[in-house]
Structures are given as C-alpha cells and as structure tokens.
Amino acid sequence: MTEDARFEDGGERPLNLGALDAGDLEVISSLVQDAVLPVTEIRWQASKRRVGLLVNRIRWEDVEAARARGRPVERVQSLLVIDNVLGMASQGVDRSDRDMILQLMSVTFEPGEDAEGFVVLTLAGDGALRAKVEALEVALRDVTRPYLAPSGKLPDHGA
Image (cartoon, rainbow, N blue to C red; front, side):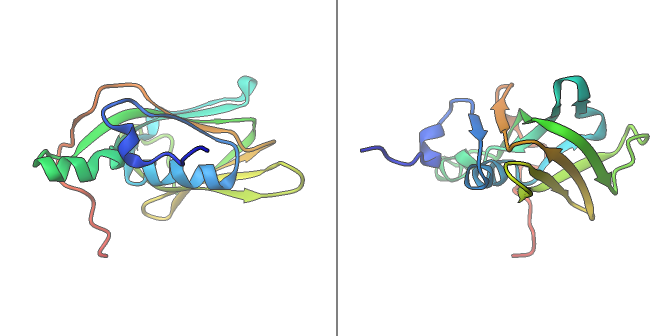
C-alpha cells in the first residue's frame, strides 16, 4: 500500500514534481502561489513546444517547520515548465516593460476536446498567461538553494 506525499516529506530537499492531470496541477499551483518573476524570465520555445518560467517561489512545504523553529520565510528559484504547447496568449502583461515584476496566483487547466486544453497562469492585477496544450504536462523543479525572503513575511490576501 502506498501513501500520498505530504509537505513534510519535502523537508530540505529540492522539489521536482510533474503534473499530468488537473489534480496533480492543483499541487503545483499551491506551491507556486505568490511566486514572483520578472517578465524577462518567461521563455516560449515554439520549436520545442515548451514554455518555461523561472519563478521565485515561497517554500510553502517548509512554512510550518520554519515557524515551529522560529526561522524566517524562505524562497527558492524554481523552473515551471509547460510542455506540449501549441500557442500562447497573454493579458495584462507588457513584455516590452523589461522591469515588470509578475506575481503568480494560480495555475489551472481548462480541458478541451480529447486531451488538449489550456493551462492558465493567473497573475495578480488581472493579468494572465494562457498556453494552448496538446496534452497536460507541467513540471516544477527547484534549481537553487533556498534563500531568505526579502520581506521576511508571507503574503497577506486579507483572509
């Protein structure tokens, strides 16, 4: 018998997760909520049918342990990669503004016919990125060591 993974299982190890269905994508979405990235860290490789984003995400999997030990909040740089991309669209994102910082709120899947559909990255401030995909395949992989979040705080969404 197998058990579901728990946040505690991540510990100090870098994450390397994949999503092939909407349920898997919910896990990735929860881990990249409130991630920030400069607009310059979005790459669409049309010939490889891939979109990659280098995000600075909160280590949500470590927040409770950090609080228990009195440690500050940490972030880590992670690659969020969407494969099987047939096309891209954006709203509220000025790619010419090289200083624009985006905040990722969620990653969802809107199914279409057969296996295709849209991966939607909802951004703070009414922005969004929408990738038309042949099939859902999203990966999240930590690529740096954790670092202290500059603010030292978790985001407050007024909850």
